Length: 217
Image (cartoon, rainbow, N blue to C red; front, side, top):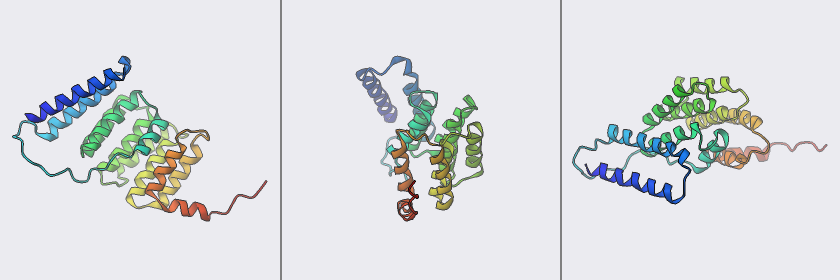
């Protein structure tokens, strides 16, 4: 039961911080949903009624990349309907539960089936759940996102991430090329997007240096 005590203290701390920073009350449903889903995940996976005992750290937990989060907020917005589900999926990822992150995003597209950002997020979550592979479920989600908005850079950028993680860098570069063509020229998150690509494919910088310079006009 000590686990629930710690979880409750954590929830109260979040409440105090929200009050301290004067977080807009009309947006309180977002952190409330994240806490609720985190509690549900803990109840399902954490077995809080068992006696306390030392445990080993969670294996294969991927740290959340702040640059990727910055790009996601630029691509799909912040403090909106999408953001609440992305936050909840992030919480599941931090806990080392990619299956729950995928479940969160699946619930999101059921709520808003016409939202390309949520479908792209589902594609990434499904790929992480399936061992960083472009599984049929992930491929379908990315295709659905692109179908809903063919001019949005998010779906090809996310699909490129999956391809790079799976080791198919050539295919990843093709998807990222599409994303860069669709990306607004003045996008504030362009540098963050490039950082993410370089982390996953360091050879991109060398490839860019070897490209012939554009002819002078």
